[in-house]
Image (cartoon, rainbow, N blue to C red; front, top):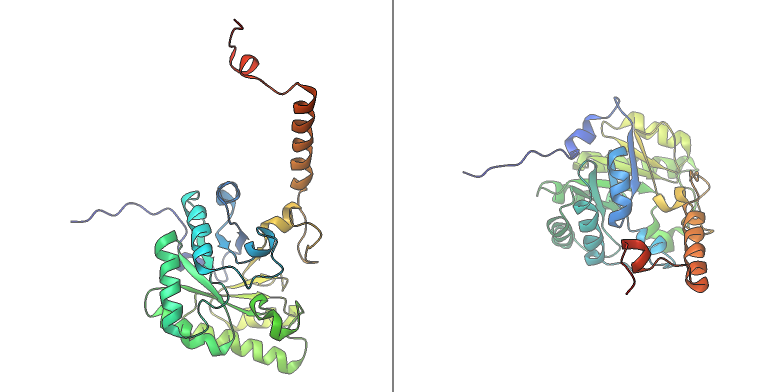
Length: 274
C-alpha cells in the first residue's frame, strides 16, 4: 500500500475555486533565491519564458527551449512549498501538434514537478488544450498580446482595441475554457474587454497589463524590483529598487578588496596569528 504525503501547495483546483471569491496574486520566478522569497505571499508562481529576456538578455522569448524551461521550473519547485507552480511552454514546443505538445509538456512537468503549464494561442490551440487536459496536464491559456507571436503581431502592441479584435479575443478565451483550461491569462488587452471576458468566463482570468477587474494579476518580478534595466512596461509598478542595493553592495565589496579591508579568515573566525 502506497503512502501519500500531505500536500500543502496550492493546487490547480484551488485556484479555480478562487473565481469570484479571492484575487489570485502571481509573479514570475526562475531561480531558487527569488522563488523562496516570494513563496509565502503568492497563490501562483509562473516560471515564465520571459526569463529569456530578463535572465539571459535575449531580444525576445522565442529562443529558449522546453528543456531550459523545465530546468528552471525544477529550481522553483524545489525551493517553494506554498504557491502553485506553472511552467511556460516556449515557442515551437507545442504548436506543431497535440502530440508534440503532450510530449514536451509531460517532460516539463515530470522533470520539474510543476503543477501545470501555460501556453499562448487563440482558438486554433483550443484542441491542443483539450488534448492535454484529457491526458492529465492542467493548462493555463494565454490570449490577447502573446509575446511568442511578436513577429505576426508586429511588436508588443495593445490588443482588442477594435470591436472585431475584441470579439476574436473573447472567442479565443471561451474556446480554451470549453476545452478545459483552468484559467486564462489576458495580456495587453483593453480594460473593458478584460472586464467583459472575466465576467463571461467561469474560470479565473489573470491579467497582465489588462484590468484590475480580472480574477488575478501576474507581473515579471524583475520589473517590480528594478532589475529589468530600462525595459519596464508602463503597467508594471516598481515597488523597490533592488538593483541599487546590489550595486551598492558590489561597490562596497570592490572598495574593501582594493583597500585591503576585506574580511580575512583571522578576523572572521578568531583565528590566532602565529
